[in-house]
Image (cartoon, rainbow, N blue to C red; front, side):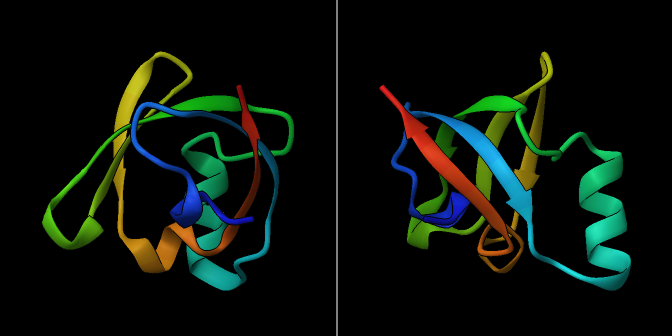
Length: 75
């Protein structure tokens, strides 16, 4: 499952980032690394962008970027 598939208000745990190149570097620099936990705060109209809470800060990602992050849902 990817980060794009997680519903609003749900918590997740990152398994790994499958993006490559500059996008991967940017995501890892923002804290998207294996084992990190976060929460989907809300999704904009048409689900793009997605607002997340990660490491105590808020970040917005495009759906195309969220599809590059493998996660598992935490209940």
